[in-house]
Image 1 (cartoon, rainbow, N blue to C red):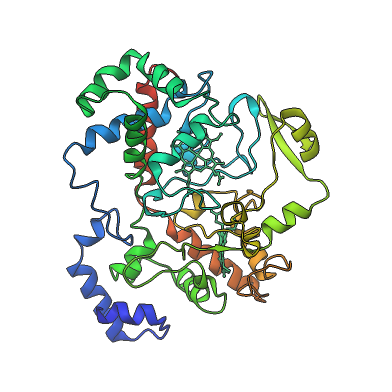
Image 2 (tube, protein in one colour):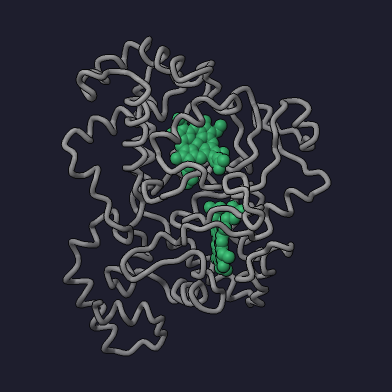
Amino acid sequence: MRPALAERMRGCSRSSLLSTIAASLIALLTQSASADPALGLPPLEALQKDPSAAARVELGRRLFMDRRLSHNGTMSCGMCHVPEQGFTTNEMATAIGIEGRSLRRNAPTVLNVAFQPMLFHDGRETSLERQAWSPLLAVDEMGNASRAAVVARVSGLADYSSAFARVFPGAGINEDTIAVALASYERTLIAANSRFDLWLFSGEGSALTARERSGLELFRGKAGCTACHHFSERAALFTDHLFHNTGVGWARANAVSRTISVPLGGGQTAEVSSAEMTALFGGDLHDDGRFEVTRQLRDRWAYKTPSLRNVALTAPYMHDGSLATLREVIEFYDRGGIDNPGKDPLLQPLHLSLDEKQALEAFLRALTGETVGQLAAEARAAFHATGAR
Ligand code: HEC
Ligand code: HEC
């Protein structure tokens, strides 16, 4: 490990003249590395080495943004994973699908999803190719009756037949190629090289402010965040790829009644109780978390540790979107999560001062990748290129 990096990893807050000089030298020597949009992420080679990747990605991007992929032509992947909203939906705690149907969970960002070995808040899926069929077929998401129906719909759209024939010679439009195109695109949604990455991995001493640096010290020190939002000296995904009970799911399950804001259009919303919601739409809002996958009692109300990259852009937070701001999340951890019989013992009250809470938040806001604007612009351009607007 480079000496300056070793020091950063140790969390040495004593800044000596020597380490400052070393940091500047490393910054000079690694200037080309800091132009790497994936700085701070583990290597991901599969896609880059494939010469036909660019055309496949372009096709996947169009499919992702195309509302015609839903049963009634109203809903695209990009309407819940909104490019300009951190590839999630900032206005809604839990996603709203086709014909206003309410989903039980918050739409996670698809930024850096290539690095997620387990998909969904409960980790029930492991392949992006297979995952894509879940929203396409879910009655409350894109509402298609079957895979064959989707293949038939895409085959009927003139603008896709020549593109698929070019990208998938001999195969054309089928269940596999639709999923492969979508997944190929999703794997390019790489957003790293944040100011944190420049500071830790490129040694740019001025990339983080003093306040952000003290936030980082709290993050991996007193506040104990790295116990679950793990990172190493080689890469930072800010997750242990495990599932934990923080109390959010337990609280939701035990709430006597909760209300959901339903958008009525024209900026209007209505407050509806979950019971009314279930009666109206028949949706099952019940949620046991990881337990639904493993059937192990200890996994009840445990959810995947999300990556915190780009977290400033991906509000609201937690699997049910119940915390609206980063400040609310920090207050939540300061209280030690929500007590319940299965709560992870790693969560204990922190007793942070106001200053410490602000520093922690400032640090979380330094995790925004440099490519997010460009990725959103590319997605929006693809949307305008589709036949449906
Ligand atoms: C109606 C809103 C909606 C639509 C449309 C939608 N999604 Fe999602 N997406 C969600 C929600 C909600 C989740 C989390 C569900 C869960 O955990 O059970 C999710 C999860 C995901 C994940 C897992 C991310 C992770 O980190 O675990 C991926 C990948 C994804 N969606 C891709 C897509 C693709 C591709 C499409 C289009 C084919 C799509 N989504 C359409 C709402 C939506
Ligand atoms: C015991 C493991 C654990 C610890 C310790 C922990 N987290 Fe988390 N964190 C999680 C899990 C699990 C979730 C997802 C909970 C859910 O979806 O309901 C989460 C969610 C979050 C989110 C919301 C992200 C999103 O996209 O919704 C933020 C922000 C966050 N944690 C920050 C922190 C900070 C800051 C600390 C330290 C004060 C911390 N976490 C400590 C496990 C942990």
